[in-house]
Amino acid sequence: MRIATMMFGSVARTTRAFMIQPVSTLTTLLYYSDRLPRNLNLDRLVRSDLVDSGNYLFRFLINFLRCFW
Image (cartoon, rainbow, N blue to C red; front, side):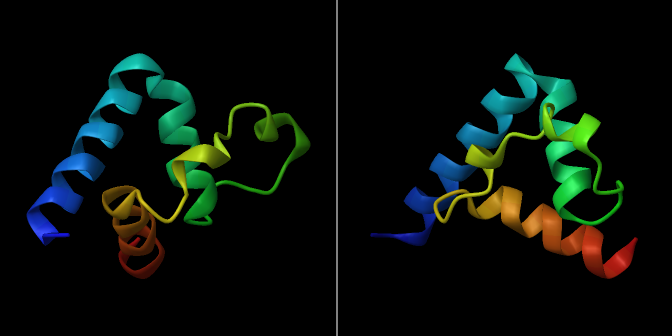
């Protein structure tokens, strides 16, 4: 599998998630990058299906926020 194909799918999936459910996608991004507290009230907004092995862009954004913010 070519890297461009993998990244295109990841960009499409992340963009689609931000367009359909922007609040829960942003909450998931901040939650997994340790910018939000671990809270039971936030668990209902976190979408763990976005952080799977095939979503490379989303995982990159999480690691970027962990390192530089």
